[in-house]
Length: 138
Image (spheres, rainbow, N blue to C red):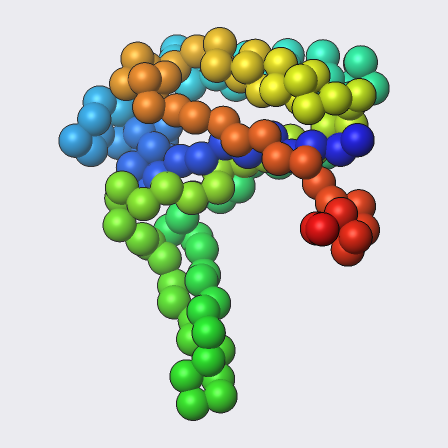
């Protein structure tokens, strides 16, 4: 079965990784380098195990457009940036594994990703099964 492992962040998080201080300290270059090294090894291990279907990191919220409802029959489009504290999808992995427990185990490995302490204290990861057909919704 396929599962999506989702990580979240805010524009403030993206700014911190880019070395910009906000109300939280900016990432140091060595912290960012350690995160990149961890993610590279993490992704390689999933590729080698045959469990990785796809993974992507997403651009910051400042590069986002949100399309909501209709106003006078026209979709409403809002450009980013959003409030710095608003969390958005930051990246994802699609894995194909034997069980929800295995997908959760993989997600748990992401908790070991190095970075500033304030990031690890508030980070969370969602694991969701992918639906293969409309009948899976029932």
